[in-house]
Length: 215
Image 1 (cartoon, helix red, strand yellow):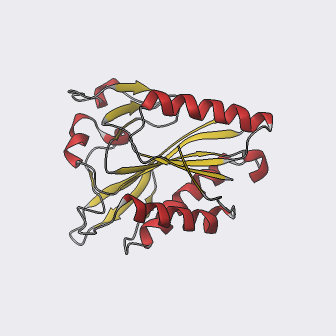
Image 2: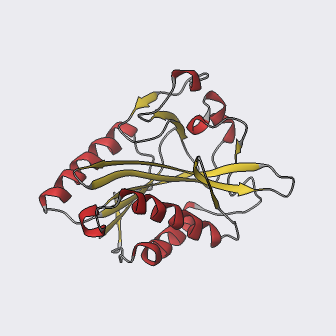
Image 3: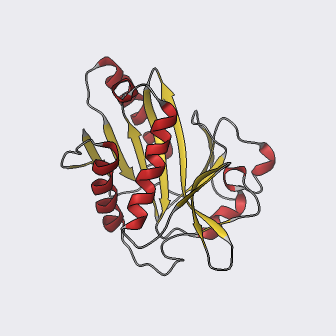
């Protein structure tokens, strides 16, 4: 498995093109599975279930239509994105199990920072419960599968500008907020998160990532 890391922000169009080509190469047997860690400039993406009513005010940010599942989400600096391109035919061709593994991966990575991430029935993503009963979303999941090869993936809020979420109803879920490691009082760099993601990926998926490749 190849493990890519981008130190500079990656334009959404470039990332989409790369993922689609890599997925095709994996299907053709000409490239191995891969994970790509990156940040995007500020933008919104709309999944296949997105409702126009949930785009409140895009403001200066572009909006991209995607083929992934889910609704509207925000990507931007301070958020670690992990695009995962794997052949599910090698994982029992089970999409639901794959999504559960993505959830487990996020939960395990957050635990490295002392944060308890939790699943919630009917609410996509990973959530953090506060002592006062509030629950905020700290990580999102959006997956696309084409001929059993995955692309898109997960995003975890390390230290993004949370006010940028005000332009959308994140993932179509109202009545709850969003949070980040920084808002929870945890100082963590992208490099810190990358280490946690790489180590826990091996644990959850039983796949050994290769050395970091700068992309």
